[in-house]
Image (cartoon, rainbow, N blue to C red; front, side):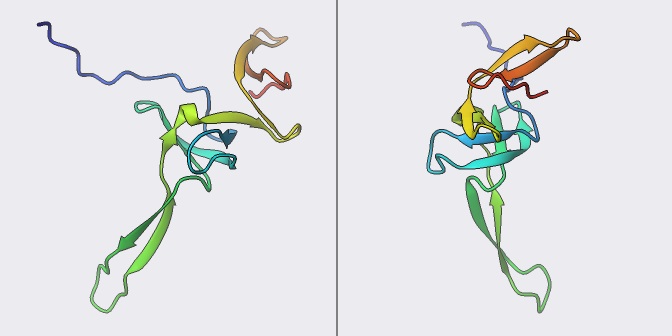
Length: 115
């Protein structure tokens, strides 16, 4: 048997940090939020207000009280679509060239350019 390469593959995501997206699958389906972080190695993203997880933190010092911390956990990038604030609709993304010849992302439903 041939030995397989164990290096992780970098995937190109259709969303970037700062994009507005709508969740299309999972328990948070329908929620709209901003992308806070992208994780290209695992094809996951962190969206503001989506997939909230609570963590119970023990006290670190004597006399300090413990606390419950809420934070966003990553979700798979295939579970979100780019969202247009103007038209209030989610859409797939396509790549076109603008007047200057630069490659830009465009929403298929609205024709709105993102970059």
